[in-house]
Amino acid sequence: PDIADRSDVVLGFDSIDGAKLDAVVVPEGYSAQVLAPWGTPLNSLAREWQEDGSNSAIDQQNAVGMHHDGMHFFPLNGSAEDGLLCINHEYIDQSVLHPNGATLDDKKLRIDVDEVRKEINAHGITVVRVQLVNDVWQVIKDDAYNRRITGASVIDLSGPLSFSPYLETPFSPDGSQARGTLNNCGNGYTPWGTYLTCEENWPGYFANNGILPEDQQRIGISETKTRYGWDDLAGDGEERSDEFGRFNVTASGASGSDDYRNEANGHGYIVELDPYKPNSRAVKRTALGRFRHEGCVFGKLVEGQPVVFYSGHDSRFEYLYKFVSAALWDSADAEPYDRLSTGAKYMDAGTLYVAKFTEGGIGEWLPLSLDGKTTDGGILADSFDSLAAMILNTAGAADLVGATPMDRPEWCAVDPFGGSVYLTLTNNNKRVESNAANPRVDNKFGHIIRWDEGANATEFSWDIFLFGAPADGDEAVNRSGLTELNQLASPDGLAFDQRGIMWVQTDNGASAVSDHTNDQMLAIVPSAMVNSQDQQAVVSGDNQDQLKRFFVGPNGCEVTGFAMTSEYTSVFANIQHPGNWPYSNDATEQTPVGMTLRPRDATVVIRKMDGGEVGV
Ligand code: FEO
Ligand code: CA
Ligand code: CA
Ligand code: CA
Image (cartoon, rainbow, N blue to C red; front, side, top):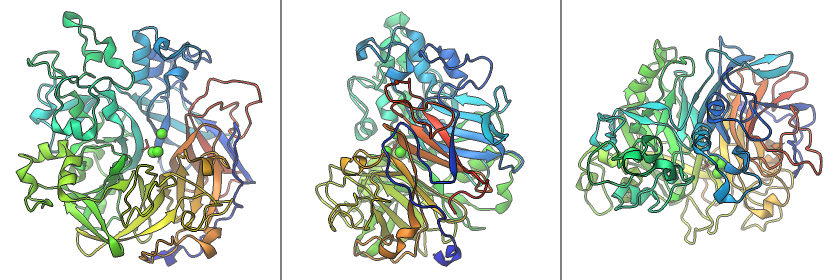
């Protein structure tokens, strides 16, 4: 990769100290404001957010959702001060969402059906118009672009699984639609101007009290109960309601209006949304595989070559995938007449691959096609009778071809210069046997791996870029030589800006680091890929100046989701599940000691006080 293209990029701020405050911290000369916190009305159908948690399900359907995660800024008319923010809402905290939540024990949290509807509506995606007005970013209420996609919205299905028997449900007898998107974690966007949201820990929302089909066993659908007990409200017999009954996917034995056995099959995908077309439905692109998608990022675009997407499956010992489009990239599609048709062109047909990492920095993409070779000398067609059946159990197919089990693949990011791809492997405290790409057993602190594509679609070369670690760890632990000023653990969110600065966000539970700092965002100017397998990351020693802590979140939170305006003047990052924050619109203002707030997930906008480019 041509790392030299950015040799003049220097991080122009002083790395900040770790912090453990009910406030965010940014470098000197920067400001941070709270934008679009959970419950912010998008239109006049929603009441203002109530401090006592009393907002209704209808309010929530028309307001910003909970637990902000992945995010992207879509400019309007190319503006750096006016655009649409798409925000994922990963999950909910029932004890914060409901009025009684903070005081009653778990079993008494909810009092009625409206609260369950509110929970479903707090999931999904927000599209919201935001503008910089008098130096403050504002949500434009009642804007025509504003909308919510929730856990109950109707969503189209496309690609190999659409119209297959696996997706036939009482709601969609032809298997063309699913209801809702759940656990939207990381995100992506496309070269043609759409948003991608990724369905991550969706299996937890379904239960099967009968005999689990193979794909449900493999992905871990519960045999007993669902994550939030939505199906508890389904009722029995004649009273059984589709609204909540669909979360229990036990085969009833009879095909009828309450046979929800295929409901979970409509989840686990990359979902494409056109933010610029408020009346369009979102589309689940099944060709990109079905698993716990953390994120989705497109690879370096080359005219006349396929478009490539990378996506990690975030769970211990799961895999890294790439999708290679059948259609070849035509740069005229960057300004398409119809964005979702362009999405269909590049995302509905192609080949899915899973990664195998070998010693010596050698990597191989193993095809997940019916003629893909399995480790027992056969082919995937021996186990799956159609592409739809194989995609339904993508992880099971990946097992058969011999993919490398990783330490929880989270976000990918693509270097805008050379096209190297970086992947966060957040942690894996269950690893007892190392492999080349996951060299630390009991990997509490995580690492970042990267690769370059090879001469053909199945080859790549890789190295380990950075090891998370506490500054006081010994050499075996602190392999990247991190200091007090940049120690980090459990890298998760990851993004490049167009200047070639990589932004790393953490979701850390390891006390050796969290005793010193809350979750954070750091900036890195990567140095050349050395393809070295000495397990000595390349950000070390002389490169400390190019790995700096830029932002620290408030107590209890995770920092996740990254977006930036075109002129690099505003950076958006999300604070998910803060403990006792935000106190005011100034994200850096500390909640007074002794005051307990109903916490609100929120986007934070970071700007330079002089209006200049962030980071340099
Ligand atoms: Fe939702 Fe893997 O983080
Ligand atoms: Ca994550
Ligand atoms: Ca995480
Ligand atoms: Ca999270």
